[in-house]
Image (cartoon, rainbow, N blue to C red; front, side):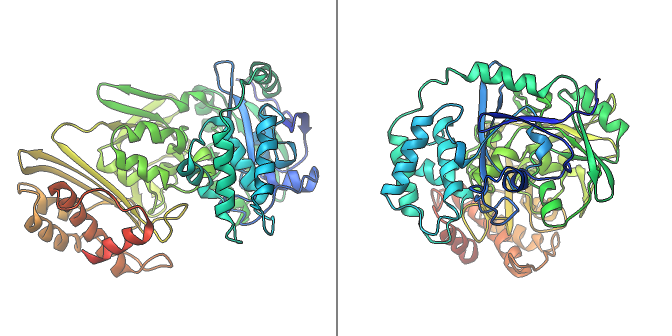
Length: 500
């Protein structure tokens, strides 16, 4: 394992950069605006919500090609760009797709899709990225793509029209330069563990970026006080909003061992470094509700960066993914040094801000069982906005049946306690009975002994408890065929949750 300190080397709009002496927690947005004077990339929220800072990253895909994705520059740390290529609105099309970049600009102008203009660069980069990656196929996919971009001038209509027009123009021409670009970026990245250091406000700050899981284990064992960072969708806010000093960071985003998606013996295995965008296909194949949940999980740029392991390890009581995984009976692989252990995911969450993870121990993967023929599943998110919003309540249920009788029940919730938590009393009220209105009514009463939700800016305690109860009723109605399909918008979802 080599870890000699090196400069940060990357491509910016086609030109090589080698950066030293800046704090490891310098964001890409800060660097672009303050050092490069590329002011087309804007700062709006500084927390990955508005999309005004969107840039497109390119990096080797491991098989000789290039993977592209749009991310929020405001929460990405500059050392994470080592061995990657950045394209800003000023250099869009540098590494292929120049004709699409120009067409998109023309569509935006001709359709008057820019008003004050502040959000426009982020929309343009996001739409271009969607076109380059083939994610933009029709009007709905354009809407999904810009779920993480906000326009305060309410110019969404013509912006979406411009994206739809670009999508209709066809896929980009073959990326003949991708192999050469991949080679260049690999050379810039170097071999072994990338190590970077620079003075900070509280002394020297260090950044490590291993590329395999063994080097990650060794690096973390040597620096157990370090903060692990993957997509920086959480840790980035520690810097931009909380102004924390983070003396040592270990970047796990280059560890390819953590990006595996495999299926063995009826179980899906997701590496801790799998992004939510990539996890959506694998989990959606288990049940459509999981795909729909991940479609509404944050914004597209956040799903491009945030990881399965990060969403679990940060231990948020309102994380959307853990309740779904707990309901499915998922298990977690943890590693410290050479030792690996396997635990039930629900036991990982001990209390608010406290998980069953020792110093130097990290999440490797999660094991997710597929549904059996005698099982039914349900997952639904309640939030104020339909897209890109934090849950008030996240509910996920799995019932196992013997004929019409419930043999096993797993009812998991987020937003109802200090950790993602099962409703054990409600489960007990369902087991051994048909899944009918009477059983659900008893389970709803029992649920009151499981939870005493807090009241905050997202929802009151009473609203959360009522919604949790009614989501169970909704599951029963859907299972019985009394109602069919899912509502398309947030208002209908909220009304149904409060009206049953």
